[in-house]
Length: 478
Image 1 (spheres, rainbow, N blue to C red):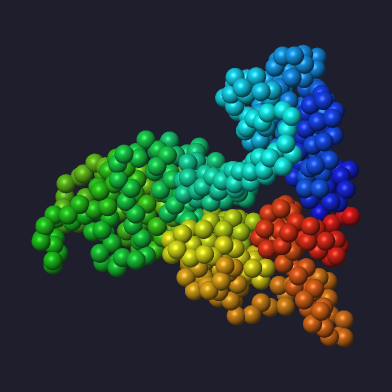
Image 2: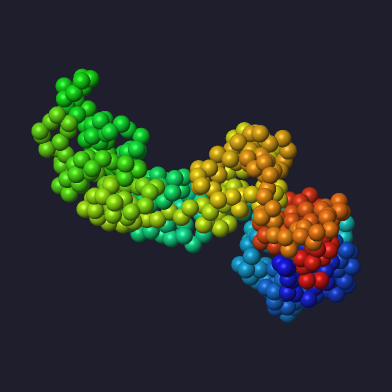
């Protein structure tokens, strides 16, 4: 059974509340604030900077109410500024509200310039301070959501060149791109259809010194055999019927740049011989021509078949494979990439929701089950297509499994130990409701890495309600 353990010594109620640290050597103010805030927040108290920093490091409170004058220098701002600076060094996102005297406005403004969230005069009015704290927490939540979005965006840009992936295999792919992009050696990309082979080829080009020149892509399996040689190497005027002018081939178009030969295993054997010569000698002859034309083109080749089997069966020349596959990059199928399927799904959900101006915000429990357990024979291309269609057709804020093209989830999607459907006595409506409720909570908790606040928001319940449901279904240590 999956449980979500909480390791601190807080009560169940306190675990659900935002943490606030009050730092003031005046115990009357500390007691007043704790009494007024304890129903809404988990409140910690400190009377000096050293104790405050220890509590801050241990509990990482979302908001700190910090007095400028602290022992042993109560009559100066030294300890207050020291405490402020060290807290912001530990967590720049923390919202620190400074308590100041009426004659300390210049110090308050200095604190704001250092990174404090706000300042408030002493003695504090509890109701007014509550508004400031509530606003600070709201802003902190928005900033955290923005940081998560930014991390998602960073995954799809910069070092990963438009590719999304956190699994070990994709991280290995990204590392290999960095290692070999600056070289001129031929690269061979292996992977099933839809795994992103052209994205890798473009990444290799973009990260290389050739990125100012052309990136040219050719699908060798999509061009008729009688036209393929001309497509690759070009032709002279009059070399065949319809050749009304001399035309450059793709190799020349990609001179000083990169040529991506997709589905290279589809090349007929006679063209494989000619390709090998071009790669070995760096020269080509157009169809119908006799002039040797020098080229400086980096080749990146790819296929979705087992190239080693093709070599053994004589369908692909072994010497050509050694030439084009100096470095081999293997792309994993989506079904072997673990939680990347959810990462990708959320990215495409946001992308298409914005593109089509739809208010679709999440996946239901059944949709998540389908996403995780579908074998994805079309890999990322299939996933993108299904989510694009689902966003367009969905009429609610949550995508269901049926929106993804799944008419009915098979029973094997749900372990019988969790669904309790194998006792032979039937299932009552209440039992069915509890089963669905538990399934949705488990799915969302796993999706949110056990984060109660985010899970509650997605499920549309309060945090106390979710906490009660977790205990009800035995998913948390009480």
